[in-house]
Image (cartoon, rainbow, N blue to C red; front, top):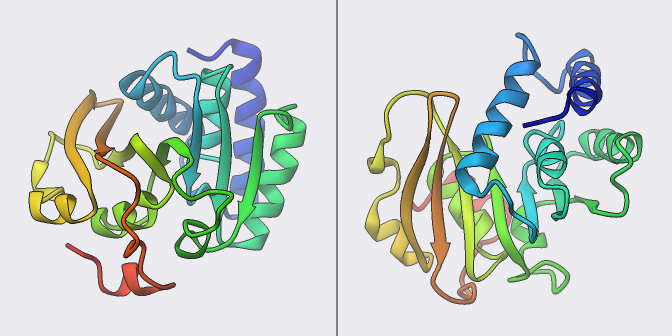
Length: 210
């Protein structure tokens, strides 16, 4: 759980993001609650390196960094305006020694030697359809790395993760965890990323694997 002072700091950052049009209407505290549930479902004591795919206003990446005080991370987003906001938030939260901002398309950065196959965990909330998210994420995962995707409200729905599609990416799962506060599908990489994935920029979104 977030300490009260950290919760206040993160709330201020998210309210600023909402004023800039980066966070939808409604209480920003709901984003903090959801990230807490996600962190608990994935690993309450995660201390490795993770990537937040499509970080936007830093949800859940910035919050996870505060919940996992020994973890390091990369916040990835394709939009320069959001990247600029993330860089300012990282500085304001005094996280510069633990996280960096990567501005670019996931399809391209997943093939960059600085990122490819080097993460123990990729998290994604609202990045895209399950097939699009999985394809864009898999290139960042090392063998045994995990992809944690925030699931929509309601009961667990394994049909979002068909075996044939998941297998084609070299992933195993899903392991569906969490509660009403935040559900997550966790898929595990069975080996290094296949050379085919991800496809070129825009293709995973236009022609998702499932």
